[in-house]
Length: 177
Image (cartoon, rainbow, N blue to C red; front, side, top):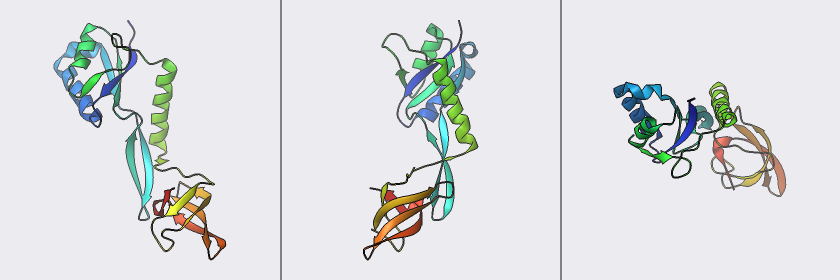
């Protein structure tokens, strides 16, 4: 029987500990390794600029879920179900549903792309209305004219004394309205 990818529901915020628990079980019970080959928490790297410094962190694509490549049988099902932090399989009550190959390929590709080039934590788009939360234009609102998310900067048109004035701001200085 071929191995397929299944989605495992975990307690929220316990994805990492559930993954570690499952890996420990597989170390103690080597026969489980022949059925369960990979455990994955799909993440992406996100970049944000705070106080002029670029910070890179990781964000989970699917909070509360793990992906497991396995051959589904009674032994592998039992190993997953007894893992600390695991709620259960995603699927019908009696039978977990495997992910399609194209879904798995897309998730793995997104993870690879993100490792190569972090995405901005908060995405701003031209035409969006934002409010300035720090700096000399605090509490002013305006419309985004340009974005340079790689550098963490945006150009906002703010109305000052009845005139639209372009102001260059960093993304951490504004919030969406």
